[in-house]
Image (tube, rainbow, N blue to C red; front, top):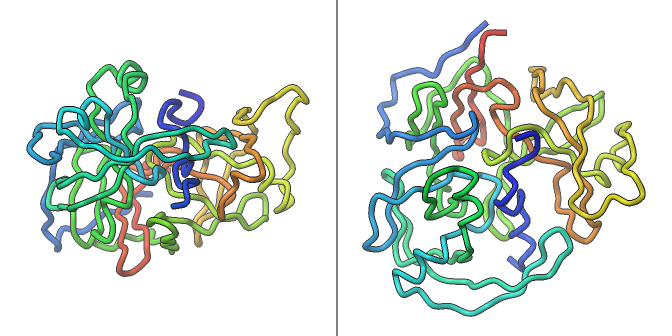
Length: 288
């Protein structure tokens, strides 16, 4: 898809509730689990919730909090209050439930508060059953590695690579990873978002940092998205070619403390490791 995964509600929407090639070393043995890579960027891994096993989890570092399918919540008898949230400025009500136990590989989280949503539209897009969208509220502080080529995900401290990018871990109201970047000589902060295919800048933020972007047509509404001719982004000491870039219109009241979001595969990353202890992102690239 030219834009980010359409039905997942967008990076950080749900946070608006009040709440040549380098290699990863092999000296640190880690537990690996198999993953499916859908549409060349979406990560689907096996997991369990409560007594339900062999579930499909979409791993999405841009979603907070974790989401569970309404169907599974009903099957497990999970009840909870309805809360009001803002999605790109639109108010809606959604049910908040507590998962007794969520397990993904060696990661096990108890009493995790999540939103229960209808995942049928997502399942239709993916062509598979989807039981949860797992964000960093479930994964952190466990460091992890995703290998898009070998199609595995592993847990534990990743080995350092030739390309190590400083990352900022913010935690209000739940953990998320932000990368300091430079676009057209302008400093920006980008949310690391495995649920995004490309790089998306938020219109008002882009204007505030002084980036030259084509304005939206007057009739474009909230959540409108247009392609932009952005070709490169600089992270740390490295400049990456961007495959897919766009500009998104977001109401001012919905903006958070980052300027856009970026998916790892948008930069040609084939493998990445998130090290929460060192606050670094280790990456392996396609040959450039």
